[in-house]
Length: 205
Ligand SMILES: [Fe+2]
Ligand SMILES: [Fe+2]
Image (cartoon, rainbow, N blue to C red; front, side, top):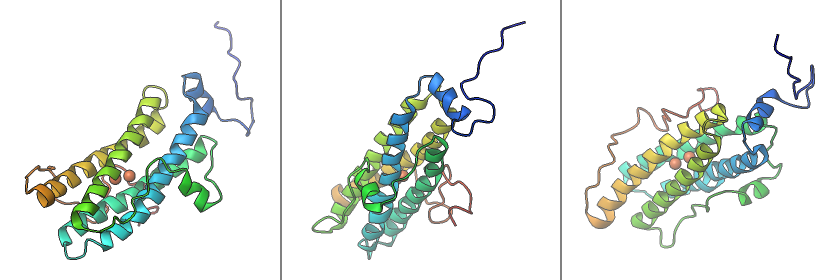
């Protein structure tokens, strides 16, 4: 009979998690992962979702751009909702201070550009999506083959960030350069549909 292996987490112990120790044993730096997930959550909530609200307002008169900005905005809210529970499952927590949280964001705040022209707003939206792609790709790289749950969540978010980049390339190329660079996108079924990342209607009404 094979020798019974000693488990790291003792019987009935609620101070440790098998769900954490198994991924640590596979080589995940859990503390670093938690830090990055908090930075990404802050980027979704504070750098993009919040500021995209303002950006969308200032696309007044461009109803098509407004609608696409709204999809990106609501999907970033879905990303925030999707990833926050994972931070806690890993033993982390959000700072109990919104300003502190904001300041840890992994992407620059998408503040209304001056002057707030359509081209400036679309450029800002495009570069914000690019930051998101880089940030979620880093999480995918850290977790691939080691932490299937975080990888699954991050890759679902990444799917949508890649779509968002393509949307804003299409809009900016047309608006600024008069060039047609199709994203392949028509429209979401409903605003903020989030086909990959929506957890459940309960979290994202
Ligand atoms: Fe996002
Ligand atoms: Fe996005």
